[in-house]
Length: 107
Image 1 (cartoon, rainbow, N blue to C red):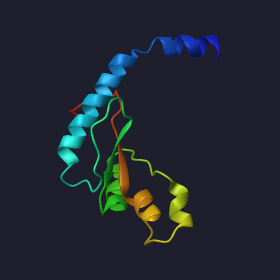
Image 2: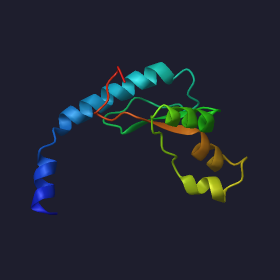
Image 3: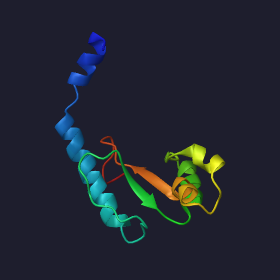
């Protein structure tokens, strides 16, 4: 690892990042748990809150139009699996909502 990279990583307050991400996850989980088809538990320091909904692909496109990037987990599965498989449904309909420390409840 370069000295520059090491110094950059040392400048991060990891406990602060973990706390913000944990708070964001808890907020999203509370707001979305009634519609989320995944049974998830709040967790510490997550990078995303997985939301499984029937209109996942449609909602992902709507969010992208609003400049909210929601990646597709396992994009290769959409080409390699049949539409009626669990793998395809997870890849198509799980929205990994970011819980990044740069965001708060307002966003």
